[in-house]
Amino acid sequence: MIRCIAIDDEPLALELLEDNISKIPFLQLVASCGSAFEAMKVLETEKIDLVFLDIQMPGLTGLQFLQSLQQKPMAILITAYEKYALQGFVLDVVDYLVKPVALDRFVKACNKARELFDLRRQAGKPDAPVPEYIFVHADYSQVKLVFSDIAWIESMKDYLKLHLQSTSKPLILRMSMKDMEEQLPATQFVRIHRSYIVSKKHITAIRKSTVFLGDTELPVSANYPDALGEITGQ
Image (cartoon, rainbow, N blue to C red; front, side, top):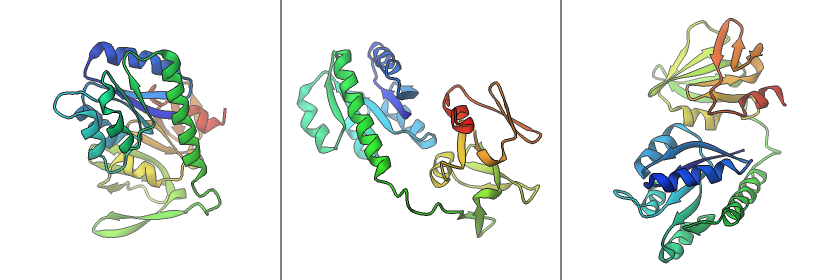
């Protein structure tokens, strides 16, 4: 599943974009944003693979938004103006769509994004050994954090609370949920909510939209529809 956001300052255009995205089975719309500044807030907390982006927006244009990102997700530009096409492709966008966008043209652009997404995943290092730990900064020290010791992680604004098996006292880190998610092995952990990441190993039961880790109950958000499938393998 490709996690995406839609960005357009025109409400009607944004609604149409949302509807088109809903028709593509391999896309998961994480958020809809009326400005580039709203999108920046989403990117700070969520792992996003693809952005659908209008170019002409007040305050910060779509092209300026892309240029401002250090780690750029895939991008499909959607605009009423053809004159920006060259600038878009200089920024290595997946595709450039001119409004009004026909559904078949939209589907074609999404298929290109899926091909690139799959190529990038295959170009990873599947044969490399999966790390068993990382070092994190906590209590004025570099602390060894063993993945198998983590039961679940809770977001608290600018901090994370890590609930460990080896101690009853949570480990507090000054780190974003997004940064932590990127460092955790995807085969061992799954994000079930904006505020929670859980270890698959330590899950003891699932009931409807609730995950149990022993006596702890955590909700599975509707924004993460694939979470239960990742846990159960179904």
